[in-house]
Length: 385
Ligand SMILES: *Cc1c(COP(=O)(O)O)cnc(C)c1O
Image (spheres, rainbow, N blue to C red):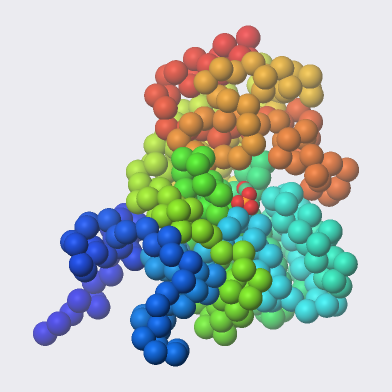
C-alpha cells in the first residue's frame, strides 16, 4: 500500500526540499536558475509545462512559490518584486471602491501609506484600531463593516501581540477577510493560516531571504478563487520577482529554521540583559514574561523571534544610542544574519509621524543577528555607557 500521502514532511524538511527537484537532464542537485524571458512553443499555443513568457510564469519563481506555500501550510503561494507589491496585488484583488480596511494601529508604515495614499484616492477607506482591544475591534467591525482586517503580530516596532485565532473568529463573524503580515515571526515561528487567518503576506526581504541581499514579497492563501484573482494581478500588473531574486530567496529559506533558532536565542539573551540595565527604561520583547502579550505569544508562536525594541530616557538618549553601536549597524530593514539598529521615529516610521501609528521618539529597534551573542552584548553595553 502506498501511504506516502499520510506522511507530510516537517517544516525544516519542507524548507530544504519543497519545490526543489534535481535537474532531469544533468542530475544537478540544485535546479538551474531559469533566466529566459520567453519559451519555445511546439506549434502555436503548444506550451511545454505551461510556460509562455517570463511575466506569466518562470520555473525558478514556481519553485519559490511552492516552497512558500509549503512553509505557511497554504494551497497557493505567489511571489512578488517586493513586500509592498505583494500587498498591493492582494488588496486590489480583495477590495472595491467604497470598501473599508481595519488596520492595527502599529502595522508597517508602508502598508498604511499604500492604503491611505495610493488606494485611498480609489475609494478605499481605512480605519485604525488597537487590535489587542476586543471591545474596540468589535465596535469598529460593527461600525465600518470592513472587507479586510489586517494585522501584524509581533508588531513593528513595539512587538505587540495579537491573538490571531480570537481576532479571526471575531472578524469572520462580520464577514471580513483576515490578513496577517507574518514578516516578523516568519513561518518558522508562527503559521497564521493554521490559526484561522485567511491570507498571509510577507516581505521576503527580511527573514525569508535572510541575508539582506534581495528584495521580495509573498502572498500565501488557501482560497482558490482569491488566489486566481491575485495571480491575475501578478500577471496583469506585472510586479513579479525576477529569477535571480526568486533563487536567492529560495536559497535563504533553506536555512530559515536554523537561523530563527539562533535569532531567537540571541534576542532572548539581549532582552534579558537590557531588562536589567539601569540606562534602559523599557524593553519590548514577547519572550519576556513581563511582556503583556507573552502568554498569547507562547501559545501561538514556537519561538519569540529576533526583534527587540527598547525605550531610553528620552529622544536624545535614543538617538545617541542608535548612533553609538559598532556591530549593530545603523540601517533600515531587518531579518538578516547581521545585527542592525534603527531609530524608527526618523527612519522606518518617519512616514507615520503625527498619525495614529507614530512611534514614541525614545524607542530604538534592534534586529538581532546570528553573530556570537557575547560580542553583541558587549557592543550594546558600550553604546549604553
Ligand atoms: C519591510 C516590510 C514590509 C514591506 O516589504 P518590502 O519588501 O520592503 O516592500 C511589509 N511589512 C513588514 C512587516 C515589513 O517589515
